[in-house]
Amino acid sequence: MRIIYMGTPDFAVEPLKRLIEANYNIVAVVTMPDKAIGRHHDTLQSSPVKQYAVSQGIPVLQPEKLKDPAFLEELRSYEADLQVVVAFRMLPEVVWGMPRLGTFNLHAALLPQYRGAAPINWAIINGETETGVTTFFLDHEIDTGRIILQEKCPLHDTDNAEDIHDRLMNLGSDLVVKTVSMIENGTAKSIPQEQFMTDAPLRHAPKIFKETCQINWQQPLKEIYNFIRGLAPYPASWTNLHMGDGKSLVLKIYACHKEEGTPDIPVGHLDTDGKRVLRVAVDGGWLHLDTIQLAGKKRMPVEDFLRGAHLGIDSYVE
Image 1 (tube, rainbow, N blue to C red):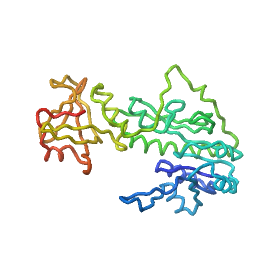
Image 2 (cartoon, rainbow, N blue to C red):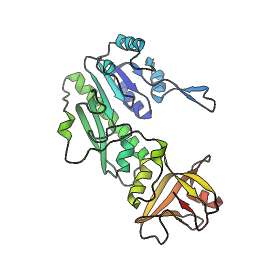
Image 3 (spheres, rainbow, N blue to C red):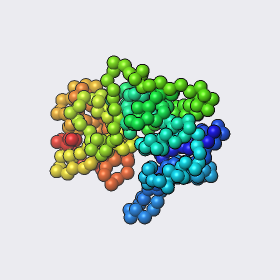
Image 4 (cartoon, rainbow, N blue to C red):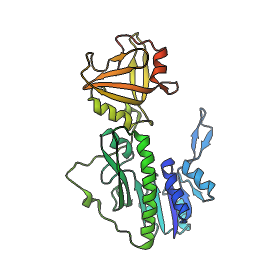
C-alpha cells in the first residue's frame, strides 16, 4: 500500500515515525513551505515534518496553494492508495478525494467535540476532565467526517497544554498506525459523527490569537487558572501589570497555582511578601504566579522577578 503523509509541526512527526517503523510505504510527504525567520527574515526554517522526512530520504512536497495544477499533477504521480493527515491544513476535495482508499485525519479531541484548530487548548480552558484523539475520513466540512477510531485520555487539574500535547501525540500515533492497518485489511468501519452526539452542547476550538490570550481577572478563580494552563507554555496568557509607580509592563504567565479564599483587597490587585509569593486577588481566592516573563526578557521563576521588582501597594493587573 502506497501512503502519502501530510503534516507540519512536532505533533505530526511521531505518527510519521511510527508508520515508518511499522514498515509502511510512505511514498511522499506534504508539508508547509519553509518559513522565513530571523530579524531580517533572511533565514528559511523547514517544518519538523520536513526535517524528519528528509532524514529518512522521503520526497517532500511543499505547495503554496493546494489547488495548484503542478502540485496536483505531482501528487497524482505518486499513485497513493491512502493519504494520512496530521496537523496540516484544510484540504480541497480534489486532494482528499484522490486516493482510492480515501484520506483520514488525526484530530486531538473526541469528535464531534472541539472541532477546530486548537482543541487541546480549549479543552483545558473549558475545564474538561477528559479528552482524547480521533481518526476520521475527511469530508467537505472541516472536522465533520465519519469517525474511524477514538481513544480517550484523562485530563488532570494540573495538566497544561504541553502535557496534553505530548500525551495525545503518543496516543494519536498508536491510533494512526492502528487505523492504517484496519484500512489496509479492509476491517475499518466508519460511523457518522451524528451518532456520537449527546445532549451536551457542542464546544468548538477556534484558532487562538494574541487578543484571545489576555487574562480576564473578573472571572472566577478556577476559570482563570484553567485559562492560564490551557495556554501554557504556548502561546501563553498575558496581562498588563501596573506597578503602582506609574509604570506598566506586559507580563506573560507560564505557571501558576490557585488558593481558595476570600481576599481582603480588590479583584486584580497584588499581594506579595517581596521574596517568594506574588498572588492576585480574584473572585473565590488567590491566583499565585509561579513562572512569568516580562516583555523582552527571559522566562523566570517569580522569585527572580520579585528580587528586582518594586511593587507598590497599588499594584494591579488588568
